[in-house]
Image 1 (cartoon, rainbow, N blue to C red):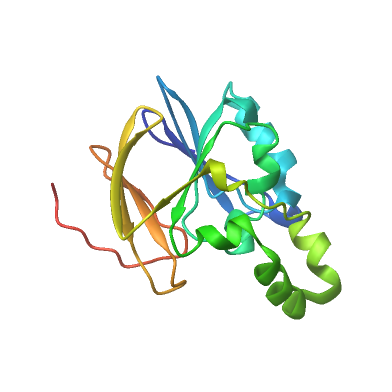
Image 2 (cartoon, rainbow, N blue to C red):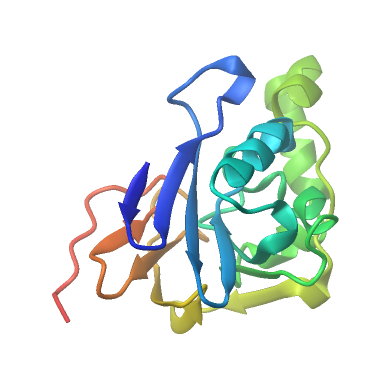
Length: 183
């Protein structure tokens, strides 16, 4: 679904069902950025949707993570196998759990039990060298777009939202009710 020039999102068809998990996409003169790649069980759909738009996972230069919950970020380490030079943008509080997901996996395993692999697939650590941890605010060019990052805790204590300047588009993960002054 196009959101504007170089901005898109698509459904990942989580466990074969529409409307549960979506991924954002920024693309432009300097490459492709994936926002919240979802779980590893959705990588085939991610690849297919990128291909339908003329891209591959290898074109990804950035992976933007709103928060580290499995439905948003579990595929990050596996995706990096296909785009090993990509930069992972995540809040500094979430970064350690991408580098060493053992606590996240342990906690989720208590909740999901035998369904862990069916729901989330393989959860691969993210190399620390690929991570750009941001604090409570940051700005950078991503895939040819000026993107502002803002700390938006509530759903998760490490949650950030990505605001695409000039497009009036925000990728907010599981955050709602954000109001920012124009500018």
